[in-house]
Image 1: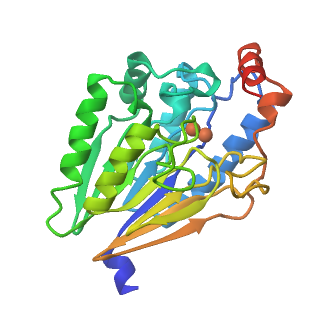
Image 2: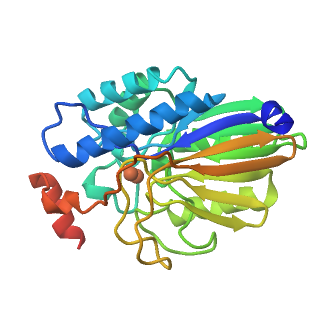
Length: 296
Ligand SMILES: [Fe+2]
Ligand SMILES: [Fe+2]
């Protein structure tokens, strides 16, 4: 218990896909997203971490859905826990090379997220650990905001004084390996992956905590753990290759950042309902129907 009390505890929740109660489509799946969130929210209150990090895709689907944005903000405020966010592709639109559902990242959508929640990049220092949160949808845009974010990231990830760094972002840096060349909406673009890899291999980044894939996975790259949080809302009916098949279970991750150590565990309270993403294809909005047809 001594180690637990002296450590900095973070709950990382991702891909909650919350919709305001008036959401006009996908009523039943959206209700499951909300009820699962409610169960996880009770668990977060019970755990009472030092910090909650929402890893993105806080909105159900539409990055311009301001009603759901306000609803999600009110849900975070009801936790009674200090929180931070990093935006997901359904919050601010998606970056290159292949935006999900054709929802493209824009400065206006990033501003809307930051006005309602908080701004990225953010940096916090707690004893031996530096925590950084960034907007992974900026990677590959070439915007000044991307350059500024790299500067903050590279500065915070190098000036460590013997400590360690944890990076929170929505998208995973890779699907299988840091040296893979793949370009898709499932992970950050290849150029950003190369630059992150250099930081990981030469600096103190010991954790990359991400989401987006709606499945819990852990990969090690040298001394860095890449931990993908599950979604609380729904999973994928086929896992990320090469792990085909099972959709996984909803939940969240609890971290304990201690002196020269890092522990994590899956948080999966009783009562969560399992569903997968096929409801989008089963009852899509017209815009989503076009997007899905074009992608399959
Ligand atoms: Fe998601
Ligand atoms: Fe996502």
